[in-house]
Length: 118
Image (tube, rainbow, N blue to C red):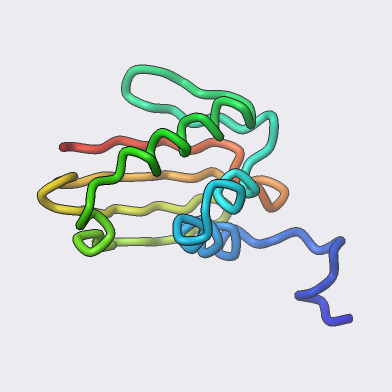
C-alpha cells in the first residue's frame, strides 16, 4: 500500500483544503467528513460546534443555493501555509465577496471562519 493510501496517514492541510473544495459537488456527507465533533465554524453572528450543527449549517447552505450560483462561483485567492488554509471567493450577484479561513489539525478542519458580503 502506498503512503498516500495508508489509512494511518494524516492528510496534509493542502489535502484537506482540496477535499473541502471538491466536497461541495459531492454532497453533504463529503462536506461533513472534513470535520470532527470538536470542530467549530465561526460566523458573524454565531459559532457552530460539533458535527450535528455543522451538518445543519451546510445542509441549509446547500438547500439555499439559487440557480446560477455555481456558474457564478469564482475563486479569487487560495493559499495554504502550515496548518492554515485561506480562501477568497465570489459568486456575483449572489455573494459579492466571501472569505474562509480553515485551521487544520490531525487531517480535519478544527476551526473555520466564514464571512460573506451579499
